[in-house]
Image 1: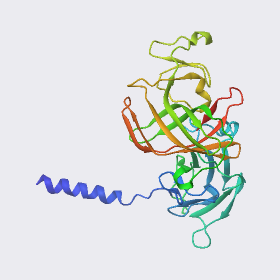
Image 2: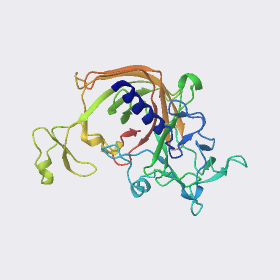
Image 3: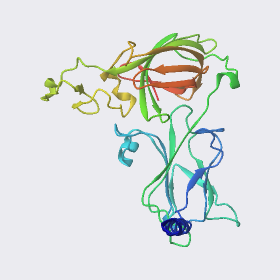
Length: 319
């Protein structure tokens, strides 16, 4: 006699769940595998149900996070030149671009397009952030956390058949951060040594794991690290775990190459480079990457990089 009673309870719970109405979810039209096809086209933000536009606050950013993976503050984004666009639906104030379409008469509060003032870069990871507080049109469903939609633009040597001259050194070294989300969330820190033919933009190079330098002594900053910690000097001195993520590529002085397994690794690559304003974008032919610890194998990884020269050190950095 217990089985029918238990079954009735389960059915009641499932029926109750069907009444749940989630807050309006935002997506980017045309986004495939984290990439958009055209950096010159407006960004098209779509909601799965109408929203109260007065509660909509949106920003477009170069994605910068702290070592814990959290978004940095708007002030830090401004300091880094990473705050590319802002919209406050309550006042209709915009900075860095303009809304070009509110979806017409059919769904004015479910779709809109943003044409940014400056062309978005190829290479760095970008994001559209829909701030907490977004409310459905009926006022019943409210987001209590921000929605973060990561995206970028692909630069493909094969597709673009790049064979153009580029103002780029024949030999450079730059520091690269690559965030891996699957199968586990981790960060690859890489020192990249490449040789480029400036006449064609074609390059070949070596990507080597970079680890925090254990020889840096925090005693110079009045700090005493444990045997399990290393000294971080940037953005501020601190004793940290060796595995702590770098927040930005400007932390490269704290890192040294390590190609020795199981922690270290190194792999080769070939690709092409092309000018992009004051920067240079690079793409590579897909290659496989294997890391022993943590155990990660990435098949056919393709980097889309934008690199600039650090004015102080002369070292190229990429993101």
